[in-house]
Amino acid sequence: MRLGYFLLDGDRHFGARIPDGFLDLDTACRDYFATNPVKGADPSRFRSLRTFLDGGSDSVKLANTIQEYIERRRKGGWTPRAATGARFLFKSEEAVSYLPPILPGAKIFCMGVNSYSHAKEHGRDPPKRPFAFARFTNTLVGHDQPLLFQPTVGQKPDVELELGVVIGKTGRRIPKESALDHVAGFTVVHDLGYRDLQYPEPGAQPDWVMGKGLDMSLGVGPMIVARDEVADPVGLKLSLKVNGQVRQEGTTDDYVFKVADVVQHLSQGITLEAGDLIAMGSLGGVPGFEYGKPERILKPGDVIEGTIDRIGTLRNVLAPEKVASKPTSAPA
Image (cartoon, rainbow, N blue to C red; front, side, top):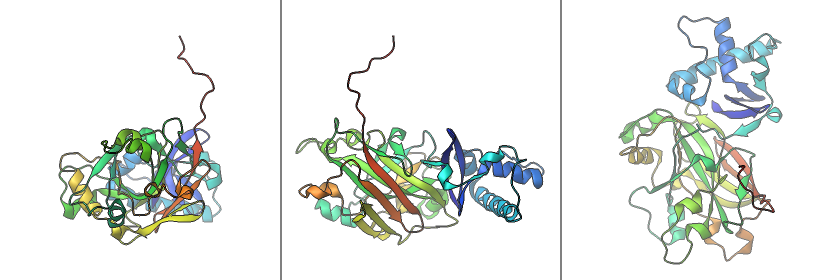
């Protein structure tokens, strides 16, 4: 199952990706229980990703049942004109815009130097323990939305492809052996940062907030692939292309610390909540370590495509910020 948010006629909807478009799960759930009444059932349980995650594995099972029910009705020639909110029930991909498949206010953790190949290009040994930094929701953009280039702030944007892990069940001090039980699914992440802001001068301490925290600098999507499709992301191939040219390539086996290791580590002192996102870190081949090659520097208009086997392809274009010609002032 593939879950996420999409924008339709200016409104935000939660749903599932189906072969010919999107299914609004809230409307579909209401229609299902109207036709198949179950005592005590909550027809609004799929109103958002949060309510979906609250149901755990039962939500996935019910959503799959509802999808099969809708498909049977559609194959029988049914059109949902009589259903409540029927115009939202299913839509083609062309009719909607993707939104980041992340809960508003979710915590975002990014793993630093968490692959053998990336440590090697740093000229260092693999880390002995996981290292993480935080991002904020102001950085999020979805599939086919632009990543923002802000040349008045930083001049050397750099992008990394990473596996995204979405927490499905809240927990603290989670044992490694049960860590994957707290994972809802996986997604694709484009981590855009500015090396000249992250490392402002030789010998200075890294500035992670400015280097990695600017607006519209973290692409996530297209959807969350639930664990009924990918139980454990072992050996998945990752490939990052810029304007069709491969920049990064490898597999999730290159990660020093796997998903279960990272979930266990972070949860020792931080409560991981349903909807939180963990970006597992970059592989080697990061353009920021090759600034001596002009063709490796990202520029406005570059098309960035990151693919992870069985998860999907995330596409973003690097777009320049439109700066006002005159300073703006707040209204009196």
